[in-house]
Length: 293
Image (tube, rainbow, N blue to C red):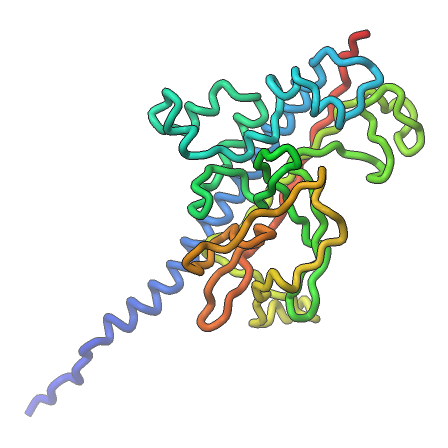
């Protein structure tokens, strides 16, 4: 008498669930790191183009980098921080068929390149560069980048504020090399009259969370996520230009990748909210100024 085989009802479903989890993790990693690579290439191209174009603007030899960014020629041709935030109403009202790319086509070259990294802020109904949403003293909206200097054992961040576009300086407390009359030191001899431009791009993953590193690198990372708590964030400097932070969580409390007053984002992990995986990509480009006197 033949014995009947043991029933395997549901085994295929269990096997698929195990395989699907691994495939999902691989797919998420491929997408996120691919997006990071795209962002790094985009900001590198933007830095190179922005520095080259800024070097060609006819500015007096003694002009500083800050003065150059405030110059009307630079604002119209190279970079204007106002266009780091674009209202959807403005895009829809323009003859661009609601296309952000078309809307930005006649904007300064650096803004045009950076617009490829814009995210859509549902809470404010704006397209904007990733980071922390802020209000300038003149009432214009812009974006600032919080650089995490350190974290406590609980994952609470200590941050340092930066503009999206800055001058690369040998000594951050001293004048940089843009002006031909810049002091040496801190600038190396002969390295004045240079456009030393750097751009910060805060990449934050939508599908990966931030974890604390282990005490022993050989043991890997323990399962201790960095909790999202904006109330425990400490800033070691004030927002540049006297700007005021206006970012906040979504009205319905839904965590988002760049939500919160500091733009550090939140993710829901079971019963707690954690920070997304985050890296600030900083790129530089240096060009000799074409000085006009």
